[in-house]
Length: 582
Image (cartoon, rainbow, N blue to C red):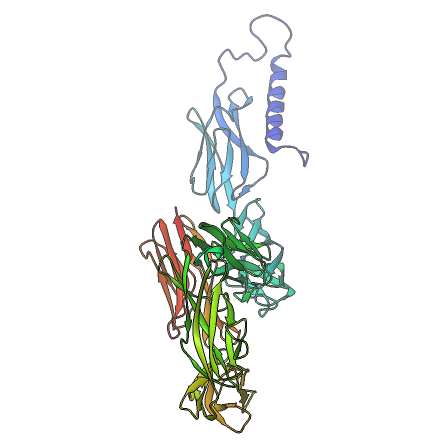
């Protein structure tokens, strides 16, 4: 038999040759008459059936086919191919099956008997089914590039000699050449922990191994959140205030970054609400608009973390100034504040947005921010006006020539977290019995700037947490001074970001989803608080979605919002919408 010849064709050819050899003598006796050469007037009888195979002994691997031919042997010495007319059977179909065409298929390793039945005459052959041989394994994908913080699933495939392949991902032994950069789990999940690579991630199985080359790139933006999530103001022309929105980027490694000044800001309805390049939005007409931010190719619209900006029909109706009827000694300044009252009953601090003026510049001066300072003794009118709304208000300030006698700094003892600020107030007591806030008129100093610094208005910033108190002193330059003791405490949580910002879970697939909670501390550092004991995870609909330690579990179709809250500080994250489908 030719090495490339089909085994079935070979056996059929062999059978045909047998028939020809038998037929030649029967025809050789010359022409016509009865009483032919054989002298046998009866029909030939089937005496036996022989099973022929392309290989002897007959073997086949699991999943592959092996053909048999059935040759009928007759009483006159002839033979005939009966493959298509006999009834085929296997002694154990769990090991091998055989079809009506005599083609057997290996099912599992073992030995069976293949039988061909031709009207009560049978032929049989033994078939050995062998287990397939593992030839190679493959890890897919073979080359992977991951952003820091991202996890991907590798797959290990075993290829066998019978042409079949099997997923051996959970059966393989996984390992990484650099577990600090790209560790791999026992199930083949690779996590990008640090920028670097390429790292070789190997899978071993039955003495064979294969690998994937993993490179870790820098973290990428996963979502953008805009805060505050909602704001409501009157139109600017009606005395409404601008609103400062901030954009926070959540990266694939869980880190957060304030990108307010780098993001591209958009209003869904510019005629209603305008937003500038720094995220400041102003109302133009009554209505609604969505304020969104784009950064790094990611939009807050995608993560459903944009802000709803409502422009009301309210109109500024009145202004008030505090303190009213103040007494101010010569020298120090006094901060005036303006509050606006609107037609819908709301109020707002309009101090930075009104126009300030004094009735007599010879008696007092005032800054655009509302700080008044006496020039000469007398009574002067201080006015706050909102020209666009046509509303104004005035109060009198009495400038006196009293002498400063003492200074008091409040609070006298306080704590401030690293990275946060604390505003101290310096109050002057005068010879005429009056007092005044002189915080902006004194010189402020810190006894230890390495721990805490103070600016010219008494605003203290914690630099380094330390149990040793820092003396913050206010002095007027004439030798009168007072101090407060400030202790810088460890940084506190000021914001919590949860990623991803939304998720969809299919019950028919994996019913769980892992969320990550990253806390932003007052010193700008971040901390993963996903499984921290003080982190409280909450679901608005536990029947559909439950959450524990950041692991969201789908219980039924529906939706819920999930939040993470830090117990000690009370800081809560933005809502993460979870949708559950079939």
